[in-house]
Image (cartoon, rainbow, N blue to C red):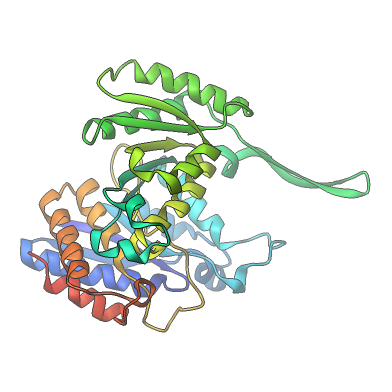
Length: 353
């Protein structure tokens, strides 16, 4: 196979972890006879500095033409002024919208060798293997009107949480299809006791569930879901939820795995392409020190091979290599070890099938 992959290193530790993932992809290409062609483009704060825009049109055009996109992270203190009209995060939101990637898949699996790295008790973590399906292009982050205005001697801010039936149906249907390949349970997370958008979400979810009589559906209020992720995470298989709830819950779920640096994600549009990124942020406090955990980005590259390129065997090879490295004691500092980003990457490459 020959594939065109766009790299968006972004800000902070983004360039370091993307470089690590590229090394692993190149090693996979050599072992399995594939050619991956990489091109690098700007997004986020570095794009603002160089072009004035967090998502230059040339970047979006390149991403649309690519077979897949691998992203590092965006943002940092330099661009953190809440009054700024142009922010790095606008590049990420614009990229998701521009590529039409409406479904974000975030798997959370606790590696047995890393149970002690989590602050939760070991008996809560054994056997945890879940995936969060987050709606990515609707809800509060994109709803209109979105504004701040002066009235009655003070500022008023408005954000709009809006969903239509088709947006809900396509994400929920994807969750049920994934559940059929797993343990056949879907937990739909909403706030239907308060929000009208959640009541519509629940109604549509019930309709979709009728197509999948072999899959169990439960409705969970978001505050209860947050509690259960800590008290009984094994009770979840596939979690499906709206944009903001998914954003918050997946960061909480990262604690289960011991570090945010462990978790990958895939953003899909149901057709071609795809956007792949670790769930962690730009971590400016450790940027440039060579100590960032590259595993989340490397596993995102594995998801890229699986979902965008259809290379299931190659994706599994990366996952097994990561498992072996961890099982044999390879650790970056966030996991209580001493390996650098480069050394951790090399440990994984050495264990590729």
